[in-house]
Length: 188
Image (cartoon, rainbow, N blue to C red; front, top):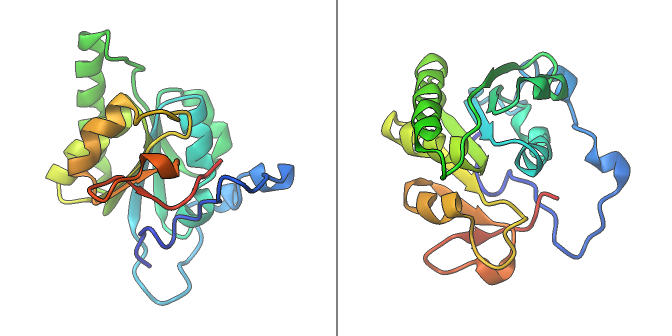
């Protein structure tokens, strides 16, 4: 099963989220589920920053759990959200701390070299940017889903990563352009 825009289940912005739907589906079985259609399981590296970026990544696990998923984020404590899944933590960095950004980029590169993913998917921000850029160089297919928090314009990372993402998505219809990013709904 290939991971593409048709498998990223996003809801339209006018739908309300049921509290039960917010629970991470199949988190307890990540890495154990077979795709079911006879295709090779993909090795997926799912990368996000903390907070809302991580929450949005968790909303995608119903799609990701049919594959071998490895998570990378900025907070090791988030591992409790994905029991049974391999997880890496990288240093948290922002655009205002260039030294930490460099360290974060090196940590992401080491993870990519260890994992060798078929697909890199990110909900942002900086670690996802590095994972998309470096993952693309290593031959992975790449998916960027810009944060729903960016209502008026794309995030800084989202605006810069577009040309490197095989699938570049926004969660706001008015931010979609013919040249990208595309709008397919929202994960929150």
